[in-house]
Image 1 (cartoon, protein in one colour):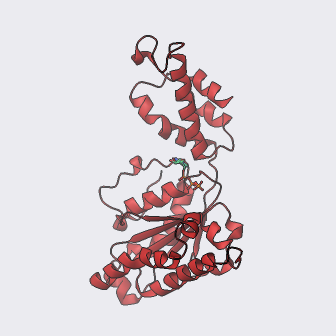
Image 2 (cartoon, helix red, strand yellow):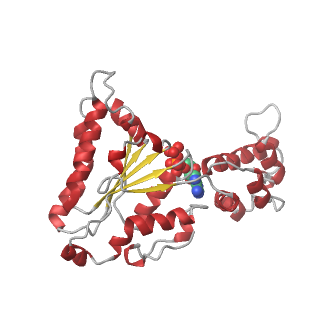
Image 3 (cartoon, rainbow, N blue to C red):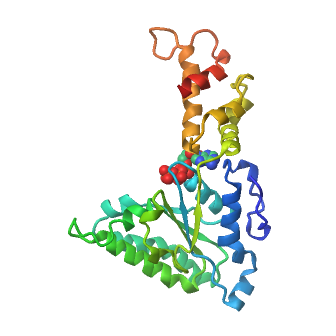
Length: 285
Ligand code: ATP
């Protein structure tokens, strides 16, 4: 992963190599260029010039491509508060009757801190997972409650109202960009939109490197495992599916060492258990 040129806002002890994100260099650079450029300036200058930081960003793309992972790592890198993660369907079903209040509560801490400190020096991130599930139900009052409409209106009111706050970034995530109402994408709302693609061959190779690193460091990955070849064989796999492949290969390696008729008793020495290329190829079939 290339380090974006934003040292002024990155936590000094943040280690890029520990981020665990593979194959998303371009997306990452685009996110920083478009959503965080203004945060590089000293807060006092931002105040003086009345600059509005980007307060909403939409990450969209197929499932399991690392959208949540990116959002979390951005928070860590910028030394933001632990992100508040809200799941779309959950907010509609679990909190019926108090959904609007829940949305308001999400913004409370950031608002209080801004009032106290008077600047945007510490960032609060709110992540809306499965954003489309809220918006696609907008206007449909089939359940008789109009909960989705209230949630959307409250969220928009809050985002429109943080003009002066500058210390909040709302990250929306969706697999269905086409279901997101255009009104949400205008400036001041989810104005930066970045597509997170399925990884290409190089990206898949990087993800496989990341997901097998611990095994390799511990001597549990056989030398015949050819990650380049596996990257070639896994066209259209998402990061989540590659992670699944590594897990399946590991299970396969273990199953070969289980004594027949026992529940988990290892044949021979457990130190002999290694994951080899054959395990990966079996996991692929
Ligand atoms: P969804 O749209 O289904 O919510 P998502 O895009 O938010 O999925 P994540 O939850 O970030 O995907 O990733 C799912 C799993 O796959 C995680 O365990 C994550 O570590 C892994 N993963 C996905 N993409 C990558 C990647 N590019 N690099 C490393 N790990 C990845």
